[in-house]
Length: 254
Image (cartoon, rainbow, N blue to C red):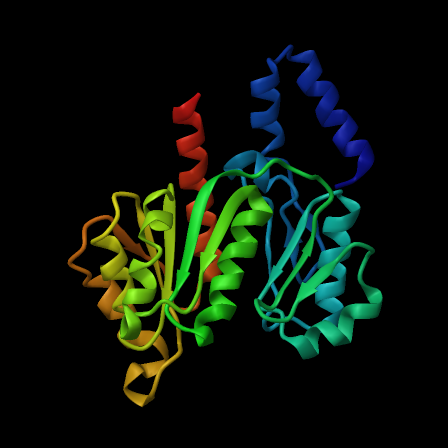
């Protein structure tokens, strides 16, 4: 936004003698930064608690660099998801300082503000092949300020591995379950705990898994109560929801 325009808006808000809460409400609807190919919503966190996150897939190198630089200049924390390793290599030299790329979750993170991590999220994955989505969920929830613990490779083919960690599951405020193939792990976990369970189907599996559709349908049809399902491979979405549940738990504790 033009600096002079922002000064005029702030002066108008001052002249109206608004309370701090009313000022924040007004600022939350200010215009975005127009990059022609993208409109960067710098005030999203004022409206819904989450700063704008960049979906890396499908964007050109120039577009990614421009968006990331815009967020960096606005002093925003940066999270880019679904950023393929080749795409990262193409932009690596043009990134601002402090960006960390994770080649398992395919995420790029830059944190300017350190926060004390809250609550307790447990992230459970069925198999090693589900790790990229599980790590996306973990990095997302930690990016926004939640504590996350991971239990990987504890699928139903060897259920004793999960049952061995039952105390960990029951101490969680919210659990994210990531599974492909038959997607059965979400129902099993949902039947063992009282905390909410967020199920994430993955595209892992043989032909009849239909790139995650089988796991998605199984999770949507779970007979365990308290299980909600996000889209296929959407570790980011699960991490966001888990963090919001976590925040509600923190509010109730105070």
